[in-house]
Image (cartoon, rainbow, N blue to C red; front, side):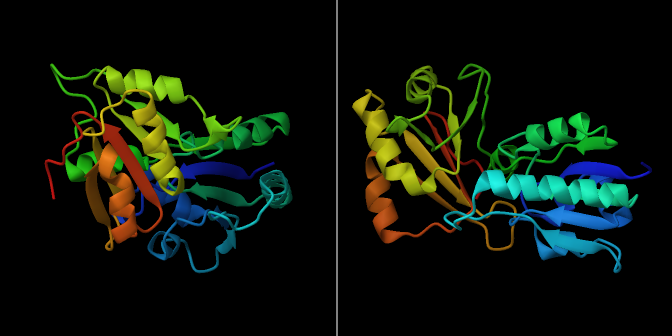
Amino acid sequence: MSSLISIVGAGPGDVELLTIKALKRIQEADCILHDALVSNEILNLAKPEAKRVYVGKLYMDGQDQTERQDWINQLIIDLALKGQRIVRLKSGDPMIFGRGAEEIRFCIENNLNYEVIPGVTSALGAASLYGIPLTERGKNSMVLFGTGHYCEGDFCDLQTFVSVLKSGSPVIFFMGLNKLVKLAQRLMDNDISPEIKVQILSKISQPDAIAFESTLGNIEQLLQTEKPPMPALVIIGKNVHRLSV
């Protein structure tokens, strides 16, 4: 096959945060299979004749994720057989909660010509844009990425989150806003101080980006008065103060 499947990270939203290589692949693409959070500004970088296919998902949209992924895989095969240059465009970075590994394995199993182009993940974008140090000399030397998903009735890796927070290092939660009140309570149940800082960062790098700051003990009160829009990232930690507005 002469086709190329480019699994591309589109970054957190701002078109200027695309890598040069990502921009080139978007401009060269015959077909772009894009996620829900990829902006029109980024999609409009494609050549006019390029086909755009929405293959994303949104919170509570009712999609069966196995069926959705099977459909995406079949699209990739069908387009590759036509010799097309395909961009599988993902928000953030393909390998950070982006199912990139599943699509890489599919390409390998089917002998497809593929590449992966990294993107700025929202966690690192948020940290830089808001001046939130994820590591800092003399304070902490690691950071943990996690999700607000449940495993057997409680949060997956809860004790790991507790251990990292007690060490003074931050934990960044993707897809955790809707369970944040319960997460805060479970962390406090495990002796995490209610005074520990919480940053909620919505629509990172986009024109309507907005940030909220609270403490673990005041999260429920904050969410009763404020409605942070999605997508939102949550950063919890002793030292997660914003240095930038």
